[in-house]
Image 1: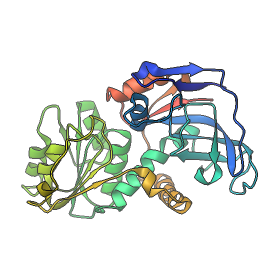
Image 2: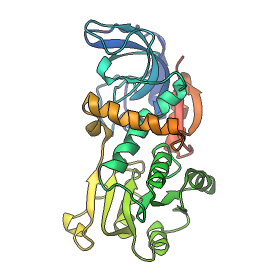
Image 3: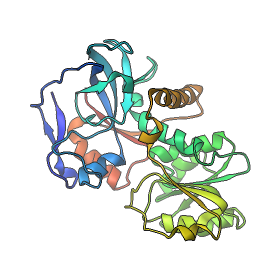
Image 4: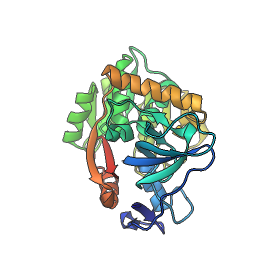
Length: 323
């Protein structure tokens, strides 16, 4: 089978195609999933670089959709032919993977495999960020960094659906247009403006009630200025690198709450996985939450997919077509 292998940490060129990997066999409680599409995420880049260490060599990718081809012993949740997606399981840059049946998310016939690979990680991330810390409400203000990215676009739509005023930050005019189309009330180009000052101007000096930051190093210091008194900042990524350290006492003057988020902690049980994914799929089905797929590339072009994502040249989701 074809798969992308990483034998040593490094740049995007560390992603090498191999056609010599054998098709794995499912064990007890597992299924063999024929992967049709894989989602590309920043966590894949962190693992490729070695920022998040994994055992070498490895097949990257934590998200995919496809069709169950075979099941192991004691599997009753799915059967061969079922369509499913998953997140949080290493090895999606491949034509096949073996995965525990309880980690699969059923996907409807109306959903393409590309859409099936686009929603799990980013949709579930958006779900917990919106619901678990300081749920947006009418009259409140939410600041979304990288508002034209895969997670950012979903956050913009979800916060607007709940009635909040949404301010997005982006790097280009083209991305600003996309963020506004998704529902952002205001968009700040942080390449041209200091976003904290703009947030305070827009909110008449009050600041944002909730700041959702997947960028990290280049944004976090200004988050502390942009957030409102008794506001909440959630860090869930580090696209520009890890944020600088701060003293906990720095939170005191404005009574700021600061949280860190990782999706794995919010789908640790099958109940949580199905509950959150159902909410995302229901929102997509209802039409108010829309997926944006930036591009679909063949598996062989995984290195190019990483370069596009690292270079912040995408708007929405990048998908690798594996079948």
